[in-house]
Length: 535
Ligand code: DQQ
Image 1 (cartoon, helix red, strand yellow):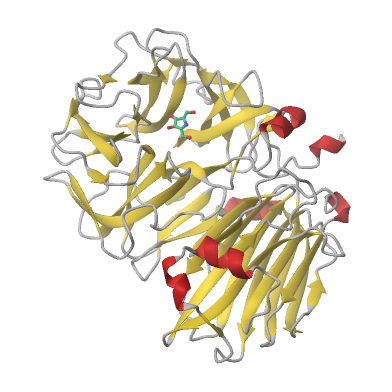
Image 2 (cartoon, helix red, strand yellow):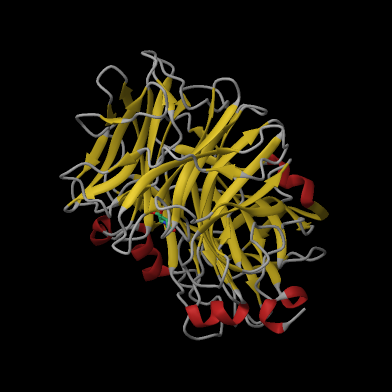
C-alpha cells in the first residue's frame, strides 16, 4: 500500500478515486439498493458534477456502475446536482434532480427514468424531452432553488415535493404539487421557512412512527406519526432538523417547540456530516439515512491522495421514545463485517487509567462499550457562562485531558502508544442547577502530528436519563474516520482524522478515565472489521 493511502477507508463507502459529495436518490428497488452520489469524474476537487451510481444487496458491499445522470442536454448542461428518487405506483422509479442551465448557476428541476425496467441494476437513465419540469418563478432566487425531495402522495391524489432555497437570509422549503408528476405547481406558501438560517440545501421531509421501531413510507400520514424536516445550511455547512406536525389540508409544517428551529437546533451528527438524505426500505420496514463526510485535510492533500469524501455508514432512524429527538443506529448488516472479537467486563477505571484493547485491528474496528459509575455526586459544576455556548465550545474549553469529577471517560481511538496522536471520544458529566448535563465529544485536536488540518473538538449534548448510572458508546473506526453513537444513538458525531503514526498495526485503542470518580467498563466488545467490497 502506498504511503499516501493510509487514510483510505476499509468499510466506509468511497469510489476508487476522485471527489464525491452528496448522496443522491437512495432507493430500494426489486431487491437492490441504489446509491447515487455527486461525483467529479475528472479529479479530487468539486466540479464536473455527475450522478455516479453503485448498487448493493446489503447496504455494505457495493458494485460500481457507469454514471447514471450526466450533463448532456440544455436543461443540465452545466451540472447535474442533487435530488431524490420516488418509486411511483406500479413499481416505477423516477429521479428528480437539479439541472444547472447556464454559467450563472440558474437552477431548474428535471426528471430521469430508467431506460429498461427489466435491467436489475437500472444502469441506463433517460432524461425525456419535456424537461425541465420546474423552473423558478419570478420573485424566487433562481440560484438558490435546488435539491428536490422524494415525493409523497396526499389523500387528495396530489404528489408533493420540497425544493430548497432562500429569500435574503430566510431559509425556505418551497412546496410543489402535481397530479401526474409532470405538471408541477408551486403552492402559495412554502411548507416551512425560518428567518436567519440562510439558504436551505438538501431538504428532507418524512414521517416517523410515534411508537415502535418500524420506519414509514414517505406518504404515510395520520395521528400516529410525527414529521421530520431536515435542512442543510449552506452558510455554516451543517444541518439541523426539527420534529413537528404536518397539516396536509393546509400543507403546512409546524415544528414542535422542543428544539430550536434554527442553526442551534438538533443535528443528526455534530461532526463531518452534510447533505444527508433518507429513504424508506420496504424490504426491512426501516428508514435509512445516508450522510456525506467531507475531508478535514487540505485540497492539496486531496489531490495528492487522489480522492476526497466518503459516505458514512447508512443508519436506521427511529423516534426516541421521549418524542423530542431521533435515534440513529448503523444498519444491522454492518455486523456481517465483524471478525475477531475481544471483550472486557467489569473493568474498573480509576483516575488516569488507560486500558489497552488488544487482539483486534484498532485502525479498522467496531467498538461497543457501556460505562457505569457509582454516583453522580462528583460531577463538576457547569459554568453558568457556558449556558450560552454550544457543545463544541464547551468541549474545546475542557477537552479529554482536563481532569473532571465524572469524566472525561471514553475511548481513545487511532492512538499511538505514547498518545502523541489520538482521537478521544468521551463523555463529561456536569451538574447545573440540580440537573445533569451530559456532553459527548469527538476531539480531533490531537488526532495527527500533521499541520494544516482542520481539527475541531466536535461535540453535542446528550439528552439522557442517568438514573441507572450508565452511558453507552459505539464507535466505528476506519482509518480516517471515527463515527460514534452515544447513548444508543441519541447523539452522533463523526470525525475525519489523519494520523501519521497511529496507522494500520501501529494504531491502538484504549478505554480511559480522566475524572476523579472511578468508572467501570461494564462491558466492552470490540471487533476487527473485515474490508467490505466497496466499488
Ligand atoms: N451540493 C450539490 C447541490 C447541493 C449541495 C452540488 C450540497 O445540489 O445544494 O454538488 O452539498
